[in-house]
Picture 1: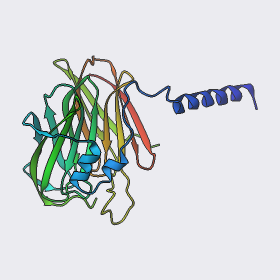
Picture 2: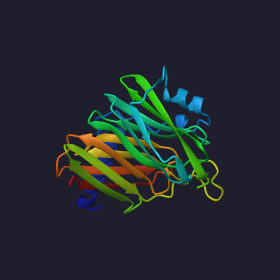
Picture 3: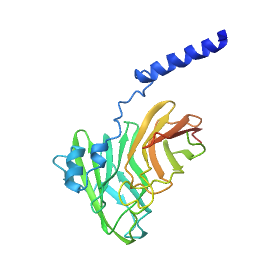
Picture 4: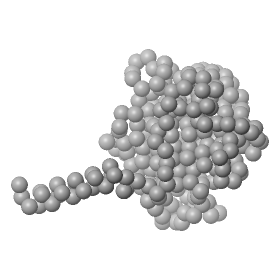
Length: 152
Length: 100
């Protein structure tokens, strides 16, 4: 083995060790993918698993989604809120086989806004849950779905 | 590792950086997928100058070829924005661009 190859090998080992020991992790302590929350099959279990307690319903969360989605495979959803100090925004669809669709973790630089596209099995509520300062806020919007979109 | 799956547009308007991203991925559902096993992106990390500013945890009911958009303060024109994703099979991709 040439000296050059040894140096490269050594560098790889050190780099690998840094990753596994967490030295290269980002500064914010973002959570690992919460499998046990996503695999819940009804809304209450998913909410419990998210740690939701004392949910306050508020109009300070705006859910922008169509009243009628032509195809449930692609439903655009935007969540906007001016609640200060938002840590997390979660999107749930109560009639989906697995109600939790997504959880977004926001650093303190972020505005209370997220936009994405989701699948919906049938007519259902889209529920937004905002976690800010250890409290939970929610709002919901009914979306009709012409063709279900969970078979994809 | 997947390649060329990410498109990013990051633009600063009135002090707020608006990041929009499109990712090419089939996003096959966990339940009710008749022909194939589940295959979906689980995590999307969004970094500004190397620090995570926003993270998405996704289930399989995010639509095929996912779209994601968020807004943050403190970005400047020319700063780097990096998006990386990992799916349930361990496949990943990453792209860095600059704020326009």
